[in-house]
Image (cartoon, rainbow, N blue to C red; front, top):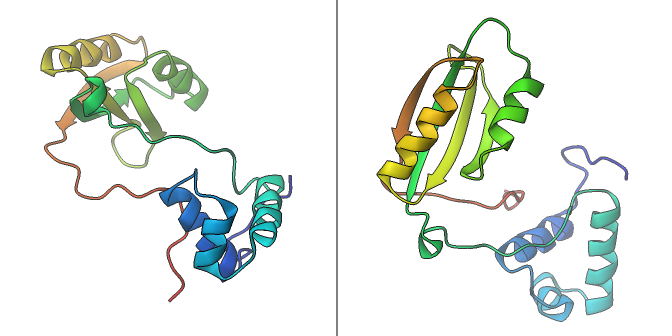
Length: 158
């Protein structure tokens, strides 16, 4: 796989990625109609994007609330001393409620995005995270409503 640097994608590749992000099941013909290419030309471009590692796979987008995961929160973890990112990752990766986790700058060491069935379930997740040996304390922020959720695609060209 050849890694892609910012700016390596042409406007047609970017348009194809936006179409795939909107509907990964769209046919190459449907995408081609939007980007003014034939279905075989779209397929060749998608194959190249996969080979380069730009497209890592195709997936389905689920509605967490429809699956019973109605509560969402961001939990900040403040760690003791200098805890390695590998230690943090190994710990949070064990939680099925964790949607995403990132090390960050500032006073906080890790920000963890979680989904839970309800407030009681969220409280249990926070308690379990707080009990991790490297965690000094936590701070939680509960999501009231998601205002913007975008797929990981390049924005349209200016």
